[in-house]
Amino acid sequence: MLSSSQIKILTITILVLISSCKGKEHEYHNLMHKIEAESVSYVRDSIQNQNLFDVNDLVAIDENDIHFYIQERKSNIQSYACSECHNKPVEQLHKEGLGKKAHWDITIKHADTKTMSCLSCHNSQNMNNLKSITGDPIDFNKSYKLCSQCHNSQVKDWVGGAHGKNISGWKSARVSKLCVECHNPHQPQIAKRWPSRYNATMVNERK
Ligand code: HEC
Ligand code: HEC
Ligand code: HEC
Ligand code: HEC
Picture (cartoon, rainbow, N blue to C red):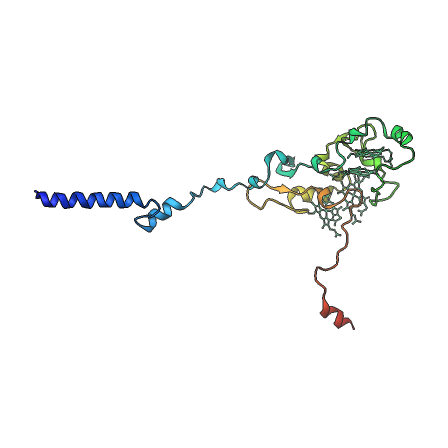
């Protein structure tokens, strides 16, 4: 049996312990408690690559059983929707155009001029879509389908992830750059660049 003074001491000790815990909410009794309380629980799928992108801005691509995404394109095309002006065939716009060129800043340096004219890829009757060689509409978001008619091997490489650029990292869903984000369809050759740093040693060696 405990004596009354022993009970008193015990009660005081318990009270002190309780109040000390209550008063200092962010101090822990040992390191393990602190780690458990303060670490964010690591659930593998809580870190989603898709979070880097707004899912509404992604377009799903399914080719040869390979699934990946590209970023929505149309909202980045300055003069889209084309139908704001192209509400009649181009021939008629030409006549009404008073001889002025609406797209004076666009010239084609792509293949041979006999192979390629504006209307090889664009549809005079339906400017809001691209046009396949057989005259079928191709959505601007899927312009790789236009390119694949003549550059099938590059498109196959791109679908496999070997040509172009993955912008989402390697985990889970892949987001790739679309062809036209690197190659201007009107002048697809990638411009030559100078090295980013002037190489004085090489210049001296050449002397
Ligand atoms: C602000 C008005 C306007 C918008 C927007 C516009 N166009 Fe045009 N476009 C014209 C006019 C006017 C002509 C005809 C006169 C000319 O050839 O410049 C024309 C001509 C063209 C031609 C034929 C050029 C030629 O030399 O035969 C193509 C191809 C074309 N547009 C594509 C597009 C596409 C694709 C879009 C949308 C991404 C677009 N345009 C948006 C006004 C516009
Ligand atoms: C090889 C196919 C091809 C040819 C040839 C071509 N275009 Fe295009 N054009 C495209 C594609 C693909 C796009 C969409 C590019 C993008 O997504 O940024 C485009 C975009 C455009 C746009 C919208 C550009 C912007 O940023 O607003 C206009 C205008 C246009 N083309 C006019 C023309 C005219 C005029 C010609 C002829 C001088 C022409 N195109 C020839 C494939 C072509
Ligand atoms: C109607 C056929 C056709 C279509 C459609 C087409 N191309 Fe081309 N492209 C050619 C030809 C022909 C050449 C020149 C021959 C060569 O270099 O292989 C060429 C050349 C190129 C080159 C090499 C340029 C250089 O000089 O280094 C690139 C890059 C390219 N195209 C990208 C594209 C892209 C991107 C698209 C889709 C927006 C596209 N092409 C659509 C026929 C086409
Ligand atoms: C991340 C940028 C990027 C993307 C996206 C991209 N390319 Fe390229 N592409 C390049 C570079 C860089 C070269 C090499 C250019 C050079 O050697 O001058 C190239 C070369 C090419 C060539 C020339 C022939 C060759 O293989 O060297 C063609 C054709 C071509 N690309 C078509 C395409 C098509 C079609 C797509 C879409 C399916 C595409 N590219 C997507 C960057 C890109």
